[in-house]
Every structure is written in C-alpha cells, then in structure tokens.
Length: 141
Image 1 (cartoon, rainbow, N blue to C red):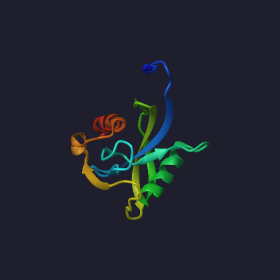
Image 2 (image 1 turned 135 degrees about the vertical axis):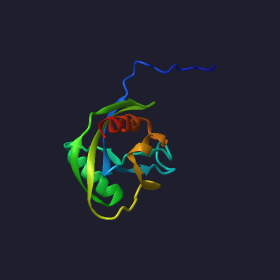
Image 3 (image 1 turned 90 degrees about the horizontal axis):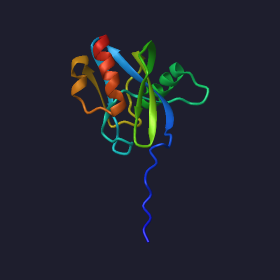
Image 4 (image 1 turned 30 degrees about the vertical axis):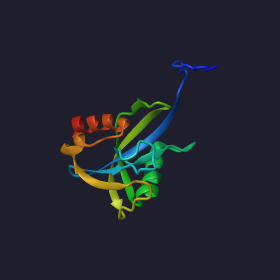
C-alpha cells in the first residue's frame, strides 16, 4: 500500500535573517558566484551571510565579508529589506551599500568574483533574493 503525503501549504517556513554587501567603487559593484557545493550553485549574489544571535546587521556584514572575502569594508547605507520565499525557507535579506577599505579579495566559499558595471547587473544569473536588490540599486543609482 502506498501512502501519498500532500505537502502542507499552511506549514510555516523558517525565517532566516541574512545580510549582503553591495560593495561599490564608483559605478562598479563587486559580485560573487556561488560554488558548485553551495545551495543554488553557480548563481551570482551580493556576498554576505546569516546573522548570529545577538549580532547587529552592521556587525554581521562586516564579519561575513572579512570571513568570505578577506577584506575590510565600511558600511555606507542601509537599503530596503527584501523578503524572498524559497522552497524550504524564507529569507529576510538586509542589503548594505558598502565601500572596500582594505585588503585583497581571497575567496573562501565562492567560485568567482568580479567587478561589474551597475548597468550590466541585470544581465547576470542572480540568486532569486538578490534580483530585488539589483532593482533597488538601479532605481537609486
């Protein structure tokens, strides 16, 4: 006998708070490509990561960029928060416009990085939650 279990659409998904850094140098923006081993492999994203308990979003983004890219940044501006629902979780993405202060980029998790002109961002294969951040940037800059 086979039992088919229907997915419960009323089940609540976990809400995960994540920060991302829109590191700008004039009209150039630093973007990173997810590795083959990461969820959503090979998608482009603004680098960042999950908030730890008791951590402010500003401290989180500085820590995550130091850990993932080996560079120091300064936070310039908070952009509007973006919520995106994936199959298993909902992301509350907190984007910051940042500036590179010191260091050379050394990837620890991502496959690639590149500086992209602001006008070219919309042509990349973005992680879904980051698509709205691209829209916000295009409106603002």
